[in-house]
Length: 276
Image 1: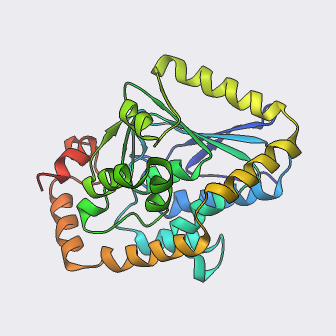
Image 2: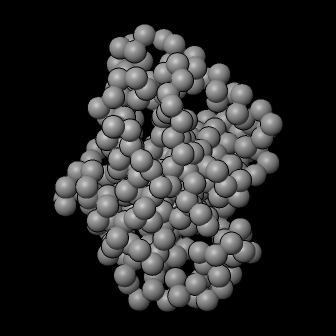
């Protein structure tokens, strides 16, 4: 029986390529409904053979995934636990499951991918972004916490120590061109060329012998991926910091200025964190 999703638009697999569009109004915040759908999607991809490549994108041109819904942390964590059990009840371990799929995953980014939204993109095997409008950021330190869903692990490996320090401790927004230069994404492409480029790459990979593609992905993961214990440790530290007085005070100030609503604060969140 086909899966039914509330926050994802999942097209039929076409020559081995599956298109998944995040569509969770008003702005694609990570909440229980989106996490529930992602758990179902990953389960279907883990057990299926038809899909060889998945392309993940957003229906909202301003927001890929801006961050988690800070009013529903307990609820989305409970949904994440359904992918691996209570000991792995975290977005980090859910994103880690995404990275380990036998399917090749490509994030196609337009708009803002911050916090756990950036970490969702980082968990994909490749990332391509629109030069004119894609923005990436790890905002957690500016909010009084730290990236708890793989951001520290992935960015340190992709960028190196100094640049990862800049991205994570600075909590600022990175445009697509700078993100490409630092290694956050594979390439920044003109918006008008992004769809065709990703579609061609996805079809090309999907056309190759499946055993070769999956074996190569598995070996590259063994060389470059953080282990689950590191992901779990980051999640535990995030949970400790996010309930601290400092984090609660800064989050309250952000909500007072329009956090989690479509408006100037969310559009320019990286810049606004520096003036809070």
